[in-house]
Image (cartoon, rainbow, N blue to C red; front, side, top):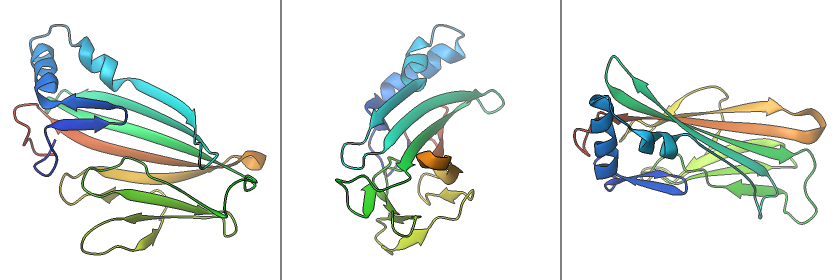
Length: 178
C-alpha cells in the first residue's frame, strides 16, 4: 500500500482492503490461521485475449520474509503472441498489464517489426520505451519493481513474461513503506 493509492490493494480481479490484510497479518504474527492470505495470494488465471487473440496467464504469489516480517507480492503475467498476425487484428496489438497503481502501462507489439515496446502515462513524460530485456524498472512512488523477459516459442510465436514485485510491508499502517 502507499500514500498515492487508496486503502485497497489491486490484485487483478481481487481488491484486498487494508483492514482485511491487517487482520490476516495479525493472525500470522500470532501463529494462527491465515488462510485468507493463501486464498487471495495463490491465484492463477488463464484466458484468451478477445481483442488481441493472445493467450494470457496471470499468477500471484505472496511470500513472507521472516527476517523483516513483511509480505512480498510477486505477480507474473505471461502473454503468448502468435507467430503470424491473426486475420482479424491489425498489425499492432496493445494490452494493459496491471503493474502499478500510479501509472497506467500500455504494451504494444508490432507484428511487422516483431517488436515490443511500452509506455507509462507519467505526467512528466509520455513516450514509448523500448524494452531492455531482463532489466528492472521501478515506480518512484511505491517502489514496485517489474521486468519484462521474452521466450522464443518456435512456430508458436513469442512469449512475453512481465514479473512485478511489491513489498506490502508489515500491515502496521496503510502508509507502510514499500
